[in-house]
Image 1 (cartoon, rainbow, N blue to C red):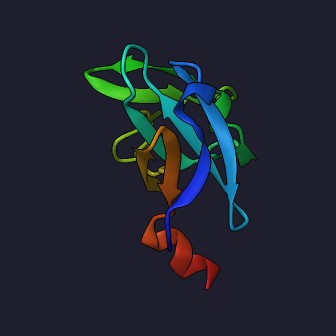
Image 2: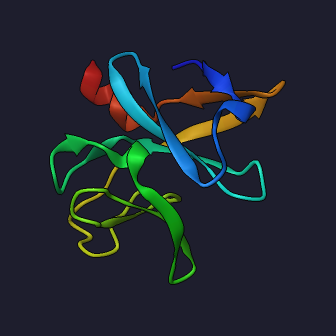
Length: 116
């Protein structure tokens, strides 16, 4: 999978998320406050079976950067995708970068294998 241009880095308000559709797959992209540090995970919350993680609250829990799902408030680590309350739940983590001020995402291999 190639890198996909999503938006300008300035289009993402710090400490918020945005959703993007990449080849039919919903991705949640987060930008941290005070930096251009970005994370990309699945937008799908497996605990609620809804595509809502891009609307969750970003924070730090036990030294891990997390997003809290807006439905059941489960916390998903933005670095590895594991749910802190229930390790049986997890989401895919995707590669993300900024190139010439543009946010680009590449879907993880597991996503592409399931889509094939």
